[in-house]
Amino acid sequence: MSTETLAKTPLDALHLELGARMVPFAGYSMPVQYPLGVLKEHQHCRDQAGLFDVSHMGQIILRGEGAAKALEALVPVDIIDLPVGMQRYALFTDENGGILDDLMVANAGDHLFLVVNAACKHEDLAHLQRNLAGQCEVEPHFDRALLALQGPAAVEVLARLAPQVAQITFMQFAHVKLLGIDCFVSRSGYTGEDGFEISVPAVHAEALARSLLAQPEVQPIGLGARDSLRLEAGLCLYGHDMNSSTTPIEAGLAWVISKARRAGGARAGGFPGTERILAQQRDGVGSKRVGLLPQERTPVREGCEIVDADGTLIGQVCSGGFGPTLGAPLAMGYLHSAHSALDTPVWAVVRGKRVPMKVAKTPFVPQRYYRS
Image (cartoon, rainbow, N blue to C red):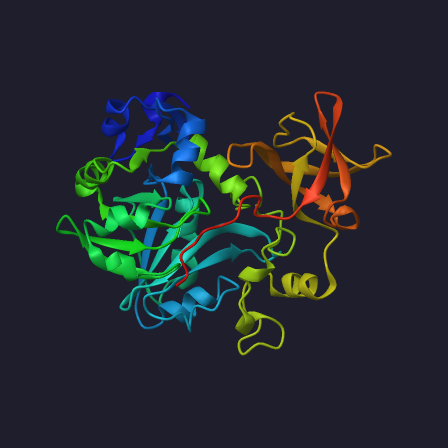
């Protein structure tokens, strides 16, 4: 895709001013790193606070009394009983139980607020409009910017602009004024660290970003460190660690299926792919996503085949790289279930060479969400 056809976020000029290296990502020109470099950006987010531009993500509002019930028919998650001021992680599933996208759903009181993946947002919008027609209003807000402030100092930084954010806990959602601007703020993120995601009108995004970057604890962070942070946290990336060919159970996301929607639950099933997903939850799966720790310094990348001691193909790597906090390479992949027990020795094939690995527990680095 040529740079002329790439969309730009409201912070594009600021990224260039800050010396970012821009790359195509999900149809947008996005910063992959700044002069600080990926490794230092990664560690700065772990130690202090990093500001990410995630304005390429899709923001959608559902309005109307029937919104929760209507959306619940598309996801294996309890939306009807989602309390006001809370959000949940959810999945759009298809009739075969495959994952169409993952998303966040917040109950804002008079509406539901959704954040969907950039590469899927137009398909997700069409999916909602097609399936929720006549039940609620579906409003795209792709003109809003989205900033993520992540790291142990994030709460101190944001509280300087709005002291009440210190009272918000993990996965809570609130309307907050920042610099006099009406924003949607959730205490969540994609790094495994404490932090916030801030939805702000595009026209005010640069002013807010500059205000946050002016704080001594904050550095701008690009896509490179965002990926290494989420991988250390064991978090899935749509289109890599899950897609329409994988079910929530195979992807290791059985926990996403709310108790009320499981077999025997108050509102069991009723979502696309119910029969296959609940059967897998009951009977198990042939292959599933696991964490993997290479036993050498060789990085193991997405697409590498995984074999057993006899050289028999037993899986494939879906995400891999180097973990700066872990201080070692790390990966996730899909393995035949017979080889998926913790500490099972397996081998990745990297440029014809077998690299020893062990099945490992995720997250690779402990998550530090603020829960109380």
